[in-house]
Amino acid sequence: MPKAPTELADEVREQVKDRKSYLGVVDRLNKASVDKHWEAYADIPWDDPDFTVDKNDPRWVLPQFDRLGETEWYRSQPPEIQSQIGLWRVATAMKIGLQFENLLKRGLLNYAYRLPNGRPEFRYVYHETTEECHHGMMFQEFVNRTKMPIRGMPRSLSLIAQAAPWIPLVSTEMFFVFVLGGEDPIDYVQRKSLKGGHIKHPLEETIMKIHIAEEARHISFARHYLKHRIPTMNPARRRILGFATPIVLGVMARIMLSPPGPMVRHFNIPKDVVRQAYKSPASQAEISNSVGKIRDLMAELGVIDPVNKRVWKAFGIWDKPGTRRPVDEPKAA
Image (cartoon, rainbow, N blue to C red):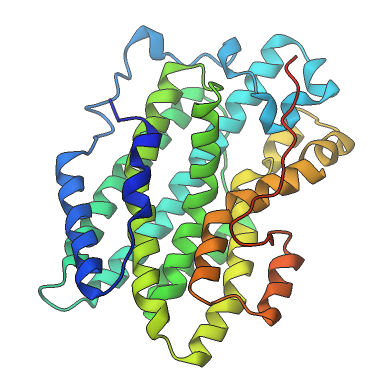
């Protein structure tokens, strides 16, 4: 079983002081991928009766920090509807996750295609790609077992997203900002869910622990790559990166954390309930906090300036580096 998420913090916080230390981090991540990895169909007991996915199982009821779970409308629904909405929410997050990781894998391979012989990043990229393949398999297997019509990303956004794998051919720095934009928000939510004891079903818990454990390496590599590369960027490319970063993060965080349209329509959730749940100050603070680590990193690297700070504010994801917006925790039912 994957080790607890809190035990991975030191690996993520390692500092890159020079090229030698950067290569040392890559070597350690390569070794960790050999020593600690999981396979979708070998390490998850899919056929265990305790892991059965029943859409009416009360363990799928939304945790209250999801915001929809604290609304009077949701609490007034029959227990089976509450369970089905919760399961739909979990399955949609997994479907969007596997679609994002599909784009990520293609982008990583485009990045690796041009790496010279002898570069340790090549080996790491293939480790990460392999791990992401297993994540995609376990996410899709979970979605299949719900027997729900889960769609994932909106179709229009999915078409636009097909450009993402080609970003490394233009800017590897922008690509790894995109990587963090997809991985950090969901990592934030998953860690919070586990820490708060909100995950009740053993299948969801197992998948989440595996994902957190391996994503810690992926996030670590992306952060260290940016720390290694951004200081050497020319001023013009740095300004472009600084302007594009909050746009990417603002869009990605909302994709990961906002309610799926098909779920809203399927369960006839009133528009005012959706606004109450997901457009409140507390919900907006959650979105801002979910990209807090990336925002701090960009500030540390000198990417944020008075001009692009306005873009961060326009997307509702600005906060003073090193701080997080206060979020009122929902009261227990």
